Image (cartoon, rainbow, N blue to C red; front, side):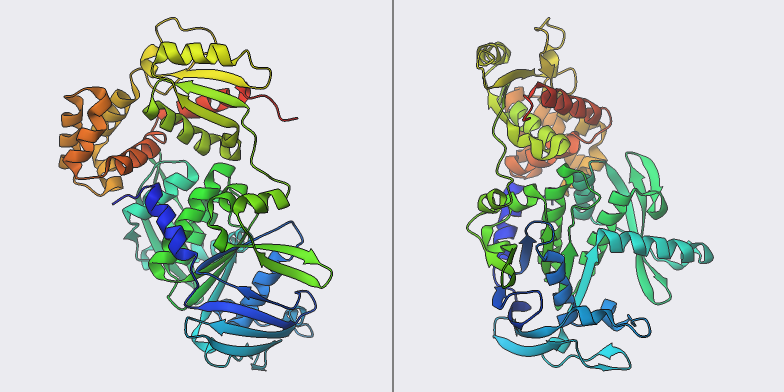
Length: 480
């Protein structure tokens, strides 16, 4: 069953509570980190300027906890990279408050770091876009020597498939994944259809593979694992940042792992509960990681406050407003904050309101009308929603033509979807989706969220929605 924004918000609140794994570290001595206690929630975001120490802090956590990346690594002769990470730390674990003193570098037996209880029961994995692409390069050298038949593929569930589409802006279907074993190292294989065109691991873009790799790591995480993610927004366009963070949160809750993530993404920072955020900064005594009052306060501290509204977009009704907002978020990234979208009550009202607002010396204005207004001789500069009919008609038609695909997205039977479309088409268009949701036994808000999100990625509609977002961006006054 697909979920809406309320479910995602509730998950973030739950993940902003204290973790059952790593609860805090107290720094007693370090050449880089100031003496302090740093608390960690079930999902914690490290934010700050470049060079503040976010990645260094992740690396320290990676050294403090046992993991396959550490135990399987042997430093070159005559050099030990772990000498870069020294100091004395106290780690507090779980709700029972068990603590362990750890001094870096750790003692080793045959180059394998030794961990004392209760730390030894945990596991850590550190991942970044760079490490993912490096794994891809290594696997590519080995893969031609093996036969794909040795890998057992299984279907990716509907939630995972939908998340890929929301993150990457394509329509994915028939996704299958497998663990590929090369020299006792595992690697994700994936295949399926992207916008109805076959793809495999080896034909993915760098950004697509990074998303596949990160989500594969999280799907396989255990309830005793701490996953460290360095800049998940790497390789990705701005509209992908928040959907990726939301999917990381979904998988973290599902697997009960803990996530510590360093990020520069404004959209991620602004959308997370402030209890998740730690502002990493350079101080005279060393790097600090402090709690914050709000995401907006963090963005101001980083010189990236919210964008001022520069353009008012007038639409016919609330549904059109939702479509325009989603198109802006998906196809213009953080720039969507420059737009305010207002439902005017009709085409003439939207055109009139835009005409009046254009008199303002500080604001731009534009009217975006339903597709059925295209042939009515509207003024130059008027923009339109995708399609040639009302948005209700266009979306119902899209579902009717792809009932099986949409059924998988919402977790319903295709026959139920077809019946719901017929019921919706038989009544006034303004009540169509309430009727459709009733037939399917879904909340109307949840149905609309999934429907709009899916519709904007369908063939033909996506290009029109991208054009609309680009035209609105050109309407907005320059900030320079």
